[in-house]
Image (cartoon, rainbow, N blue to C red; front, side, top):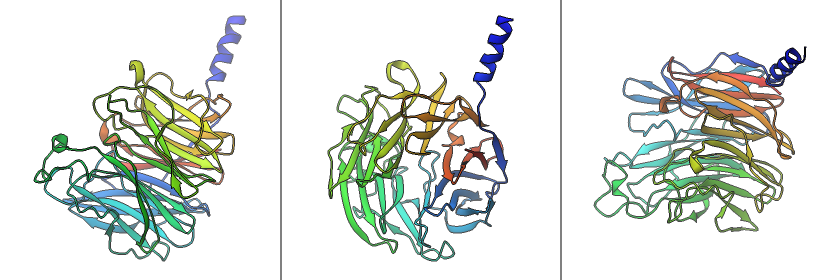
Length: 393
């Protein structure tokens, strides 16, 4: 009896309270690189790339009343740099202004490309001609962008390779052409494409991990994978406070030493000055996904909370559910999982959103929240198509 009771309780305690509801995806065949964004009015946007012969097409669809709209083409080209980890994004301010970006090749080198941005001021019906957010004019890497509405404008962060190229070496086909270091930059722009401010936020970072920006009560923050002279690549944060950017500060000292980029960036979200960050580390040869909280906008942090279940490969996403809880998603082997974590250190049982692939072509699963619903998007590597599902909170 005791043995049976123990087994029954063990089974019950591993069950998730969440149920996954597959949705009809608005994305067509040969689609990939999804991204999700929900505006302040609760409208969710899904963007993705489709390939037709040699031409890439950048689409989006909006979800209202639990229905996805007919896909709208933002732009198309045969000259984009399309990458499994450096995906295009879309953002909206809830006031008819939308912005998106792609990576457009600027030279013959494999890693020579610019961040090109598109704007719509009529709710996404018409899109402007693109403009390049950075003005260095270098045939170098520019990417790993985050787009976040900020006050009446837009905050943008990106990795900038202007210092990595030497004169006459712009067309190198690999990272062997690097001279200086990858840097982190940020800017504030309006929805007509006018740049209001631009800053260099860190002059030496990891080369190819996503940046993540969010808005606290104090202002924008950016979390990213840093890089020390000793090749320690831990998470750092910079914050805009009273009009000035703070110096880079380590979020938590994993002391992960690695001589190459792990292509595994963080995700951050905030409600007021409660900030949560999720990230992957392989410190001490142990693969982990951790979450950490701050209650003062990122000035200080509590202790990290381990989220994974022993087979983490990272590819995290995170959003605040309320002032005490965050939802985090990650890849556990070939499974896309999600779990709610409390800033007191406790977490609920995880739910399997989908089974995917650990190959690069499966990309980075995405998550957003609209009302009492979580929405997920990912690339099904077998069907070569973006899939969508939802979970009621």
